[in-house]
Length: 395
Image (spheres, rainbow, N blue to C red):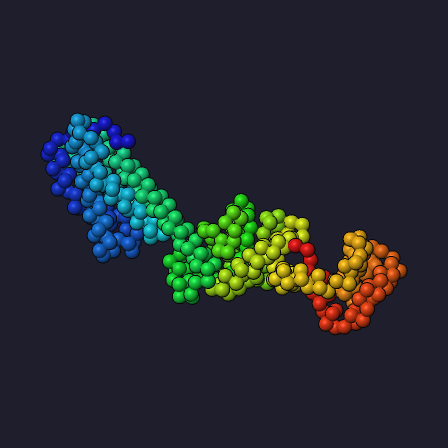
């Protein structure tokens, strides 16, 4: 807060006002020397603009110094505070922190105080009023600094929101398979450097934030409903950069216990293909082993076999028709044995180990199956159809 106002003698104020251009010029020169971050910024037109801003600030101070307590003390310095706020926003837009600007305020306060106090004393200001004058100067600088800090913070918050919206828009365009020129333009607007590949990850929304903290900072997250997904699914989609090769193993570890489904890596402009694969696995109900995510690269056979669930069901009914006359228990045992016989190429000892039965039991069951299927178990086409029908794991 600015201290209680004191009205200075008209002659003192007139003398200080006459010195404003010179004080402003000296203030800018000192800042250029003492604040390296502004050496280039203060050259040419920018330097003249900032010099005018310094004069405005100093003029605002003099208005404050000559105001009476009857008036609103914030009104004389309103334009100066607005200018300080704009300076803070400009610093944020240029990508600079507040360090340089606050240092400039400190240098400016020192230089302005030195020259204006000398002018005021020469114009007749009593020496015992100098302390009051100094208090007013530095309180005023604190107000300007606070206004610039507010401008800087507001600009960062605004630009952060804009960038988040641009990133979400980019993710939406990628997931809907937009043309390459739209994707490149959206990436530029979002200030996002495209990677080689993107890998789609589907996971519950409540787990997305925790996952993001462990993934590449360039990871995109869709802010919209997932294309093609059920609206009530409440799932998020992440697009993770360059998660192929060894990096994929790192990604899968980061997704442990997060109920995630992971698509294949694809060139970044073809991220929709990765998303479509992951979404298909989710829709087919593929389940992970324990806490591990569903890795679609390891479930390709399941995806192929379950691409048409109705056709698969029809195929099973057709090729297993010879077992229709059996009860549920015997049928289940023979189906398990036939599946193992097909997948383990008839190796009886391994089949017995997988089924936890004696090899003689395997031999007995295979005898039953040969009686039921006859020569079809030696027909390559029938063996192919049986393998397709029985190889798919339950979702």
